[in-house]
Length: 589
Image (cartoon, rainbow, N blue to C red; front, side, top):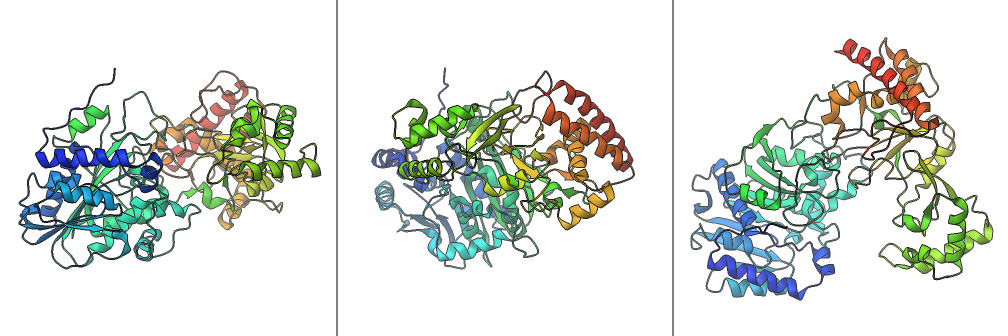
């Protein structure tokens, strides 16, 4: 039975704003809601944001908080005015100046009707079009869009966003997926960051919680932490991560985690709390004092949440820094069509698709999407069959799940991300190590495997925040897949693929996993420079790699988030790795 979430007793203005929001929902389609990031905020969260903003203003030196004379309060994506309605339950509207932006003219008209008789500067348009003018005390609150497809890319937002794309020293972040910083909610944070240059005040925003510990968001965190004293309330609830048994509902019913972030201008420091439980329990908790704890937020990652357990020592190097190339596994977006355990069945399915036969096996290939054209895919399959009827060049083996080898069609018109560069490297490699960059889930870190095949991006987990990344031993050119640093380590370890064996031993060993689990959940695994114990570790890693590759499935621990057994031969290899790594870690200290 679903337990109803009681709303607090509403003021007439809050009730009117909620009714206007409901009417707005009825007018727009689900597609519009997703495109513009329209999510109406529960009153319990609106009130919590107002309370957090009051505290932040006082921390910023404005002792009267929301009652500060000549305070300008801005909601950059106000919708029908839910936040202003909660704000005005405790603020004299004659004492402050209210400004509400929204790109939806109907929402603004609804807000005007709701707040009839009250002085609010309603502005139809995109707040991100330009700077927020003025020089008096400022407060910003709200729940701006989170959508990655929202029409928020303006010249001004690109300018303000640039600081988030750089580290504390001003160097551009070297990230392949820097595009995640273009999400609408990140742009609004950048707009807020710019609004307080030389201006006193504070902000409090509801936001996608991904930025709290996302590796690519480290420049964003560093910039915010250098300008504001931050209070982060992590409401969790992500459906994109693997969970343990504890209840962790989403307070909005959206897929990403939810957070509330307050910032006071003129101070620095980060405080954090994480709420677990049902939606009812989380919203109820917001009406009581929360125990935010200080977080040591430092370069280079500037984490906003504490790392459980030991951090990696500064001298240790990320696996990504030791190789020249690594890549995420295949993402088909239509496994039912392009993946099969039987190569012959898969080839027959492609023949049916080329002939435009109406079969259940190819139904998913007939669904057009923004990035997929069924007719273009059918034409590509016809051409492939004409030039290569047996599929030797476009159907290849796939490490689909641990010890579940299948075949996949790698035509880009049909397979969303066939990872051609990775496939070419794997063809020249002895094997690949497979691990992940991070895992926001609540389960243990078991994210290691070794394979000779092209991996699926769900090889270790079906969760989108925990995709498999392959580290082949060689590049497509046939050269060893080593950075300059990796080459020097390889020389010290004995040449050949010794660096990959060395890494495998650490990643497989429970002693390493248990000591650094919190750090492993945040970014790529890191390894110690080779020491006098290194030859033992390399040999242990060699046994682990080939036990993973060669052994049949049996009883044993999980791999990634899949409750599958490791081969019996791998059990003994893991014990060997455990012993070698324990010796190494004891030596390192």
